[in-house]
Each structure stands twice: as C-alpha cells, then as structure tokens.
Amino acid sequence: MNTGRACRKAWHHGEVRVRTITSIAAVAGAAAIGYASVIERNWFALREETVPVLQPDAEPLRVLHISDMHLTPGRHRLMAFVRSLAALDPDLVINTGDSIASPDSIGPLLDCLGPLLDKPGAFVYGSNDLFSPKPKNPARYLWRTSAGEHEQYEPDLPWEKLGGELTAAGWLDLNNHRGRLTAGGLDIALAGVHDPHADRDRYDAIAGPADPAADLRLGVLHSPEPAVMDLFAADGYDLLLAGHTHGGQLRVPGYGALTTNCGIDRARVSGLSMHPEVSPSGGHTAWLYVSAGLGTSPWAPARFACRPEATLLTLVPRWA
Ligand SMILES: [Fe+2]
Image 1 (spheres, rainbow, N blue to C red):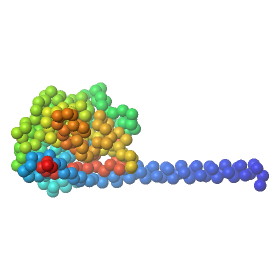
Image 2 (image 1 turned 180 degrees about the vertical axis):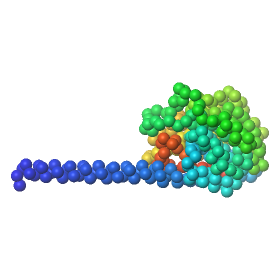
Image 3 (image 1 turned 45 degrees about the vertical axis):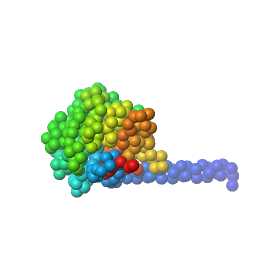
C-alpha cells in the first residue's frame, strides 16, 4: 500500500470515529434533556424525615412541608400530586414560597391544596411569587446567584391576592411576622421573614427570643441564607424550614448539586441538617430542613438526579 492511500484511510477512519462519538453524544444529550424535562420533572416524591425536636413527653407532630411549586395552570401532574397529599392528614402545613409562576395560578393553587387549607398552616413568599418568570441562561447559576435580579422592576404577579387567599383560609402570613397556632395539641410559636433572596427580609420586625413556654418554636423563610438563619437560631427557634434551592435542580450523580443559588453550602442544598452546623459556645443550634421543592421555573423545565418533592416531617421528642 502506498503511503498516501494509507494516510487517507487512517484519516477516514478517524473522521468516522469522531462522527460516531458526536452522534452518540448528541443522542445521549437529547435523551438526558428529554428525561430531565418530561420524566423526572414529573416524578414526584414524598420524602419523610423524623426530627427529634419536641419536649420529652410530647406526642409526634406531623408537618407537611411544601415549597417552590412555581405553578402554571397547565401543570396537571403537579397539581394531582399536591392534591394527593391531603390523604396524609398532616397536623400542620408549611409553604416556603415560590408558589406561583403566572397571574392565573391562584385558582389552580387553591384548588389543588384543597383540604390542606383546612389544616393549621403558615406561609412565606419567595421572590417568584412577586415577579413573572423571565427567560434567563440557567448556566449563569454556576458563577453567580440570582440575588438582586429583581431590583430593576416592580412586582407583576398577584402576590397580595395569593397571601389574602391563604390568610382567608386560616393560614398564618409569616412574611416578617410572628404568629401562634395550635396543631396536634401543641402550642407552636412561629416567625418568618419575607424572601432574603429578594432583600425583603426584615428580621428586626420579628427579632427577640422565641417564647420558651411554647411547645415548639418554628422559623420559616424561603431562601436559606446563613446570616438570617443565624438570627433565628440565636433567638431560640428549634426548627427552621426553607426552600428556594430546588436541591440544585440539576445534580451530577456522585457529586451532587453544582450550585445552591444562595449562601448555604452545597452539602446542605436540601434535606435535614443543623444550623449553625457547629454550635457557637453556649449558643443554640436549630434543626434545618431545606426542601428540594416541587417545581421549576417555566423557563428551566428540567430536573436531573433531583426529584421534585414534598416532605412529611414527623417531629418527635428530643433524644436523651
Ligand atoms: Fe423556586
């Protein structure tokens, strides 16, 4: 074989190999996007956790934690899942915000919450309850958070109507407010802030020691910003509930979330942990649950290795 023909043959084989690899990568990429946007985004999970946070002789308290629905009226599978949660018959429901993504979502939201609205409940807003979703490059979360992105425009979603409807149903509005309710026979002192991610938190409005006479002290916020959670913990709150992170939304198997889109570390992007992680000398440490949430922005409709979730937290007496 002459040298020229051998070179052309080797070059041809190399080109075929590159084309084959490119084709396989394109098919795998399309399959991953299809899986993430069609299957996993609608593969809802009920996560269950036990939190030893009550006084020694207390009966267990079952708390349903929902977050980040980003509801649009066409998300029928999401609404069906939320509707199914009423069968859990929880003692208390906490919604940590980003409930709507359209001005037409309040009716569908109330409809799918259904009997859950008859339970004792409380809520805070997330920034996405105020501002319509906008198309953005989702990869930007790798080098920055979305904090401050809403400073340029006024709220355009009906957040007041949303809050008014939930309050009319009997849920506590904890946006820079304290509250008190009885659930499962327990006297619960609550406090919450509006979304720190949108710079609407005003901890001064709720600051001060949580009532030590209550059976449980519960802090609620949308974005789990460590500096704000430090304040809740220092005031003696036993359990903090937050959302916002979507658990990272697109996780790398074996590595986890690429970003939290806020100040909390990747290891605590979702699930149960403590805050602060290391107890300050003589200071109080709170339990923290960060929900991976139920939805996504309509402009980033995909989840990978990070199923959408609601959580049933069973609060039990502290371990000795
Ligand atoms: Fe969200």
